[in-house]
Length: 95
Length: 481
Image (cartoon, rainbow over all chains, first blue to last red; front, side, top):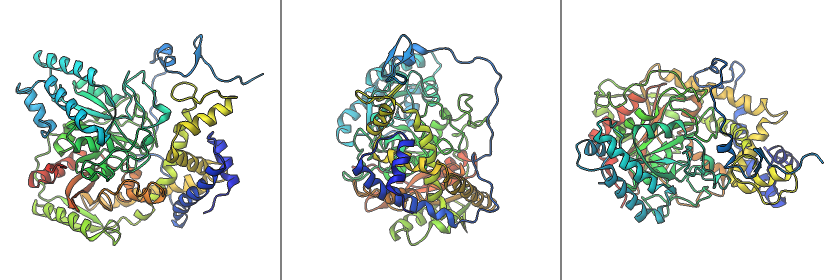
């Protein structure tokens, strides 16, 4: 199945990955081939089949609503690209 | 010393023939000598390893050693190790020093095992050749221009080259079994939920499973004894008793019922590969097993289902790499969107970006039902095939890979060709079943793996079947030159 340049650009923005013109051309071919491969799925009769999310059909465990984690902000922020006064710094969002 | 198995080294330590410091120094020397051209390791942790070895020798003197106390090994660089770089083979995490240990890493620490370093891998475990690592490709010790398989290629190659006696791996679509097969070692992917995923950097969470890589089935059993078990920090960890996996290794195989799926023995398999696998199966018959043809009718849909589900889950999991809290951030971002898009464009490699884009597409509005939901339904069909098959047989056998280790660079330009590498391994991840690969022979002087698939939680049976084969054959003893 073919995927258009416009769709690739839209998906790249959704995925927050910058792609330039030449990359879009390469992706058109690669993603087209991958989607061609997965299109085999459409041939399977799944009209009577429930989707499977977990091999053992397990559900999320519940736990008592108590605090189990301690604050490790300093350790976590020590490896951050940019912090100040215990806050993570990013480029200005609101003027 | 480096030709000894974990079991033998463990015995030597217990009997005082060698100290952990001696062993650690010996294996670190081996790595220094050989890893320059193999590139199995991303990070070495020699100083800390030697400190731990001293502690291990002390602990042994005090009489509270475990079978692993003082035994060197390595972790795939996907398991978080506190204070030791954990890169996942990516530029995105090239400077990431985790503030905590993965449960698997903590368990080996508690057992007193000595981690020598972190092994190379395809970036974020997406690949079948260990060529997509930001830190360069790993070479297969069996052939200087051959790939070791992937994604756990550094672990497989380091065990095959006797740089470590054992290494951890992870398997999302074959990433333990395929490199184990191509490097001539034994590797086990346990049942989904058997080994904790906490601190194991996530690729496709409904498929990812940590596992074991070593030369013998017995060593794999010793590793699984450390790794398996319930972990409240992993929401899909299974709370179920863990047997001693070494206890049943010596049970006879008389009466074992082996199923051979006809969909895995087609003309796609070369005559030479087919011959090696069938000879191995004849060995099993000689050991008392019976063989039966079976069918897995939806086997041909496994790759298609996988390449929707895995990229979709990857696109969600890898959204956390945004340049804010840890990892790579681009230089001089203009605004927040520029920071996100350039950080991710520069921090991720080609294959990772391809998969994120495919996954984002499959999950996007208007396509979710046609791709993700459809793939989840086909996944159930694949699982039902196995459930049916296990009504008649105890284990299923097949080749692990369609061919032995291929030449470096051969498949890097065509992602779909690379994806077909995992044609025999992917279904078991989709079904969540345990499966093992063990050395079964050679084709063109390169190792060939036999895959054994078991029913849920049948790891002990798989290890028993592999161990009995290894008592009767010598393929697992062959070493690359």
